Image (cartoon, rainbow, N blue to C red; front, side, top):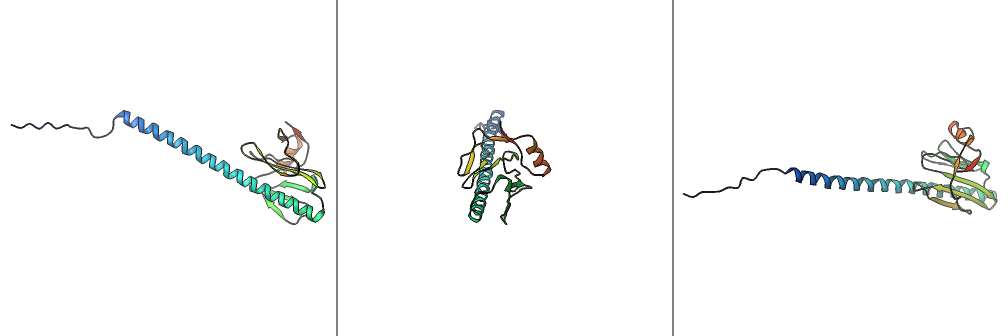
Length: 167
């Protein structure tokens, strides 16, 4: 008589195989989430750089028309809009607030400082903490922060200018 020995293989995966698969899947998900966060941060920084370039262009238009850069009192970062008194156009800032001195809205800081008729400082802080510099004067180190009345003015929308002190 012929005997057939059949290996009865169990169908399915062992517990070890399932745990290994779950571990590999978790590592891949973690890496993809970190990559997405880096891409989003870079995208926001690109938007900040573009806004800084547009603000710089507006400042230079003002200089072309008035033969000097605008004084701090003529520059306003209020109600999500950048404006220069005496210039007919304004710039939508898409969720960023500020002042003519320095703004603090989330992780974005804008700094504009009139130095002389031919010199000014314009800095935009990126999410990484570094500054994108425009203008003729480099950005301050360490970065300055809004304090006291400036913060109150930004919240109420009544001026947005005030004392700026280093932190």
